[in-house]
Image (cartoon, rainbow, N blue to C red; front, side):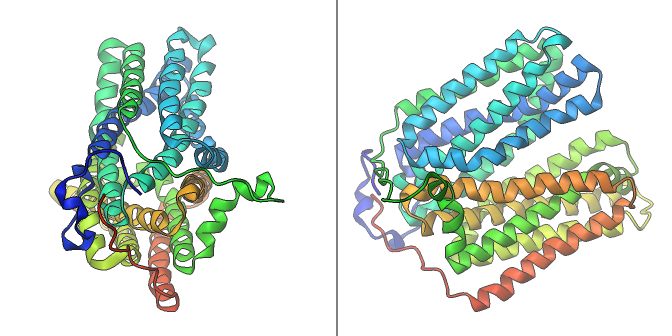
Length: 433
């Protein structure tokens, strides 16, 4: 794995001689700048689409359906991964970002309720572009960086994701109120164009697509990513545990409004600052994930991430059972809950994604990325729907308890399973160049 960017004199030293940072690579720095831009546009847009649909139709259900159309492309993720593994990832990323900008600009045609359906169509295409981007970017990073820099690279991207989720929705909503939805559309489209332009300046020696084997069917190719995740015992364990834990958090998402209202004794608007606390925790977790991974490895990083996530959910139970008399106590409690949840999630993601990138070949990166995203997002979407339907017949506190037990159970399963699995090979002392 190499890049045509000029390496520093230190590049000839073994990677283990010092902590190597991907930020010293010009190509990676451009990717970071582009990732910042696209996350700014993405996080600003997705919430505005729901608000816009709600205002156009006057229907809460119509507004909520926007989130369903963002999630539905997860079902097509394997095809996105297959495409990313069969062509130049750099060209695919350029085309996807420029194409996404063009698709987003179609929203300028929405001028009333009779054209509100365009929002759903654009949302679906925009969500599918996200899976194409994730699959292609995974392969590009694998070609660009040595193994010992992958954790730092994933941690930086995760931190940007979560940092933008703190500020971008508020910026997007504010711009929507001040200048209307078209202003948000134009800003978001410009952000995707910026990423496409930056990618034009990136030079990387990409791995060549592997030829289709004789007798190999299209279905065999498309499912190769999932089979690769399940082949290695450790990767299989962490993939299943992450899918189960994140799927169960769909129940938690279904209870978020009553949880916040009862714990804080406040209205739905309190969700905003509570989510900001979670975002700050996630930002901190992402920034520290790579350092923790170097000390304890990917497997234990996933375990401790699940433990923090499960503990945070579990601490929410007493907050809705015990009536705390003071506002500072209630906010302190919900801050601890949200902070632990936010901090733990990036550790899980960075751990399992870094292990996946290390243990799978370069030209399986797109399909394994897509398979992992599908394994996480589809169960979460289904459990959210189940939780929403159960709220009519069950006290939401039982769903909260089930979420805590499920996530902590997944953490325990990781710890027990790791004792039975042969350790995954450590990153080789690859020269950083």
